[in-house]
Image (cartoon, rainbow, N blue to C red; front, side):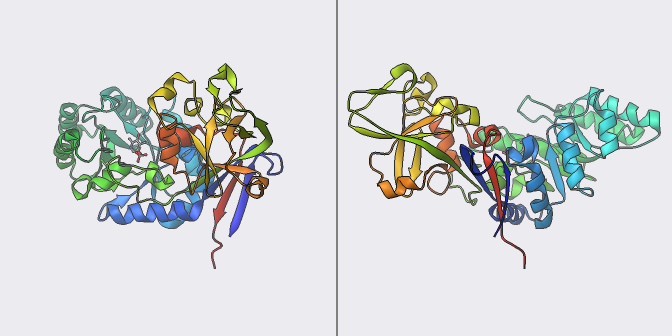
Length: 385
Ligand SMILES: *Cc1c(COP(=O)(O)O)cnc(C)c1O
């Protein structure tokens, strides 16, 4: 096993994040197999969902991934440096301020309005070049994208005037995480018309959840993100992906408090028994959301279970409010030996990412992308023989 450690000094860090790059590669290969005969790309926006694009992209390239999607031009430039030959798509499109960067770095913007198409076409015409692009179609999100009618009209005009040279036409599912949601079929049918009109170029509809929806959602290229990182893509079936991250917090103090005393800010939680408390040096500044507090946070009232940790195989409930740099756990039931190793698992083998997210009233995506800069980050990878 090769371990690459970056970020905070391992001797001093308040928390540590391990990223299993073998699991990540296996997840991508699994998604690629599910995507067949479509080709599987990888969405690596937001620094590969917070896990580090410079560590994730090389592993995906080795696994066989040839195209990547990011949100912003600078993210694309970072991927281009690592993957000189890959197709790199920019989901948030092109604007006056970013056209030059796109062309210089060979990035492919997803054009999502007639204005952007006009901009890209003018930019190319003025320079006598024909830079590639993708066309984004809105089929129901009302986020980015041309309407279906605009796209079909453009297609006619495009053939006559060669306004731009799209290599891909794509849309995005609003409710793919629920297999029985009627919007999935509506969006697929709407997109099918577009794909038929643009039948000489690739079409793409499925994110991770879309891949799980089955063959009729695959088109030519799939675009999974969260499932690569081990997150759950579908709300109505078990997560088939391997977990990728383990997050642990260092115990910085053990203390004893008596039944009837209160803990943390707001004195919102009163101890119902004599309690051993472990204080760990991870808090909401590290992306461990305050809404996952054990008590007394209004948002948290929607999620009855609240946050918890694990020491060995013992579940340790979180106590009171999560603070900026410190969080409290009830370790009364943990043996002294187990406490001595000094760490509490926050996400990992015993606590799936999506359970930790749900306990804070959020989703795995937000938890992953919010993990802060104060962790020691360890990238684990089997040594190739
Ligand atoms: C983020 C994103 C994806 C990846 O979605 P996941 O749910 O993480 O698989 C795919 N397509 C678009 C347009 C996106 O914005």
